Image (cartoon, rainbow, N blue to C red; front, side, top):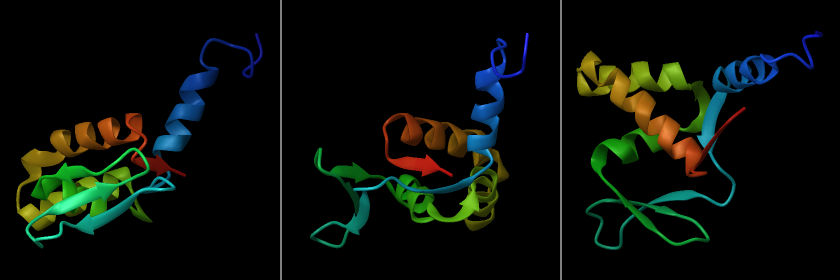
Length: 103
């Protein structure tokens, strides 16, 4: 079986994609809410109100950091390395929802 048709073809591509830089997906924009009290992720599907941690993570999705870079930066910003798994879970969920892309 060649590497391109074998059962592990998708794994390599998935790993490469996850090693890339993370940015907001096209058509997504992070904004302060009208009252300036919180953050909203805007898209054609409508606004999504974000909590402070989610907004912090998405602010870092500017195309300059990898997902592990974002995990490390959030841990330093919050002075809490125990958030690493939660940040990874959020990034996974944000990718599934089409909020971010990894290139």
